[in-house]
Image 1: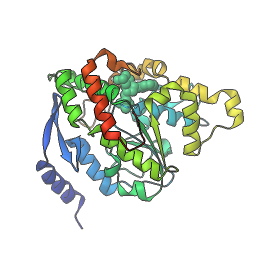
Image 2 (image 1 turned 135 degrees about the horizontal axis):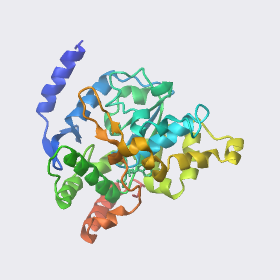
Image 3 (image 1 turned 90 degrees about the horizontal axis):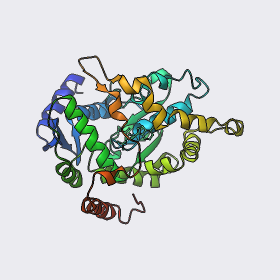
Image 4 (image 1 turned 90 degrees about the vertical axis):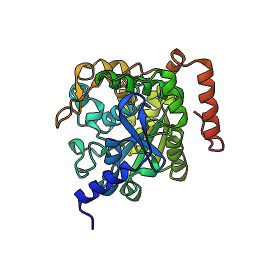
Length: 320
Ligand code: A3P
């Protein structure tokens, strides 16, 4: 049996043979592993999670491609599960950013899989369904997936990576160059459409285990979807709670305006320490709008992306 260190060394060797591409101007490369593009750090985390992460049947795992509403889903689900432990004035969401209350399996958690933040069985992953650690599938825990219109996802991702470039003093690609890469599937955890389809198909096969959400639907009627999420997770709102407006309070607490305006999310840093300089928390909160792509993409770009999306999703029963 390979030791942990031997496994890490053989992973490094294997990764060095993979195809790689520049990550839209960011100093890191994207490596293509089993058809999926990801940065070295996340790929190593994914391999380590595959080997070591032990899911528990009571876990709820929030799954998403980057920039599709992960932090929002984290805060909504965290606030729902902890609603009897904390109120609006004591919730950890007031002092910690959502990524710090719901850790990522492949990044924060790969080697510490028995820990759950405050003992709350809530975790997240950006991994595609095909790369999930086996224990997640085998233990039968529940998964919630969120996806988003590829046009808004691209625009959001472009700004996020440009923000990283600014922080490290590198030059981001021009938007049209990055667009071509996204179109070709070369984006973190891309191709984006494969990520969505992997979870979509799994949700059709296991509707009781995998809930599939769209950012746009969540924006449209957040209270309705929050109730569905709570029900699915096994934490339904009682009729008394509904009469008291508990779901509405959670939606308000987690709204873009409220969450992005908290001091921790305006001026705090994420993943600081352990040799990390940390990322500004405010980079995770940009506009929180549906259709912001109209301010950045030409009509031709939007049409090309829509056409590609239609092609990729044809026969799947899904539209984005
Ligand atoms: P925009 O860049 O379009 O504003 P993720 O958390 O998966 O990285 O997704 C980030 C996107 O979700 C960003 O989109 C961000 O602004 C938006 N977002 C963050 N918090 C939100 C909230 N509470 N409500 C709605 N959208 C939110």
